Picture 1 (cartoon, rainbow, N blue to C red):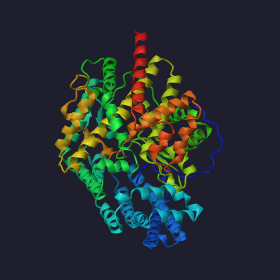
Picture 2: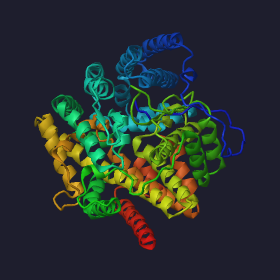
Picture 3: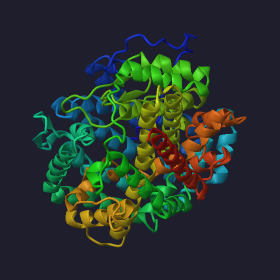
Picture 4: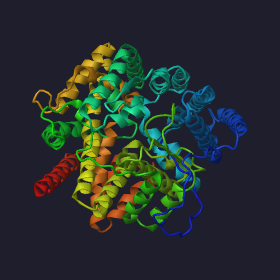
Length: 618
């Protein structure tokens, strides 16, 4: 189930003022007791879900019996889904606290089994609604005004008629779903828990373990020889498992291709986009503009080389900051800075976020076998969002905090405005909220910076964020389009072949042939490291979102009349509208070159500022 689904309906928040610098100490571990007080409560709710599934089964074949019957069955479906998301959220987060704990893994597997039962039991709904037909569905809906909450949900089902199977076909797909999640599960287990991470000794004698968190921290070391040592050890270990990850990812690609074929789509990409009714022009425009504007990316790499004082830019020179800084951003300070940065979004937004940051919604710091990375889980409608972080007290961690709280506030606003069935928002709009918060944070940090050195730190971070969110995600999207297209045509792919495909794209984006950034062969196994590839055609939405979010944030900061309300309107809409249309009506058409050209122009403006500061200092 999606991580960015729903946030609990909260009581009205008190009108407390923004906390001072010495903010109230907040817990650094999330409180899962807000979901279930004990394992026994989880077990009991699972029993209740099983009973609801049994009751829903009796709706099969009888949906159109009467308007009352139709609504009661849809209400039951919504309620059991809401219950399942709560069960699944608790299980997933229990596992993520310690991915090596057998009890957490067992609970997560039980949740997966429940999810399969939910999918199997509810699989009759779409075929039966299609069989009833649009005219009869409209009559049933109009007979009861309370049915209005299901308008978009029903319209979306009716839209997908050409790709929905009959009852037995949908049941068959649901049954097989229990056996088709192995690729992602194997990747997660190996990459997060079982990988024998290498240890290296740095030039200062410090020994470090290069798990995923250790790699992300130490790849930015100031000592260039240490960075090379980190890259060689980390990617060398992934290279040892190239064959295994190749088999795992190929199985995922085959599953995606088979499902597209069964549902009568011409290819996997078309099916993935159709889930949210996105036009193909969005994907194609993004990749076309990214490729056309690679000279801007190469300008950034050349600037980075000059700032770092290296004449031969290598892949391990991507991550260290161009400006050395010993500034620290512990979670208390990071939270205060984030809260100050979102003031342009209004008092209600600010107060809701302040309340959440002190209420045990976050698991803040890295620990052995804790899940790597960061996410926001807003899937529990009746509670609140949860944020997993791996805060390292650096500026990147502060930026990540703002990013994930953008998701959390999206969920908060959607739930306050939408019923359960339409509060779930797709990734296409989810990442707009997160990237908007990042832009607001950068603006705030530049305004309070004490000197040019600090401004350079933030401008550097902004450039790296744009590289990572726009160009890097577009590069990932190009890789996905290529490998899915090959498997759609029946080709086989080994780990070695995947490395070759990824390496060609990696080198093109980084200007290896032009001498901009040299990519060593060992590092081209990087594709095996990217977990998002197991969620087909997901990553491109980071790039489209940063384009839209940047435009919205710029308008809000400039005080453009109506800009803030148009932006907040997208968040409040949740999943009640198709996302492309929602964003387009707010003023940004992501199927055209304009938003991507604006991102490129922003990168060039930032580089102009950096070069001007450097010139003045010299």
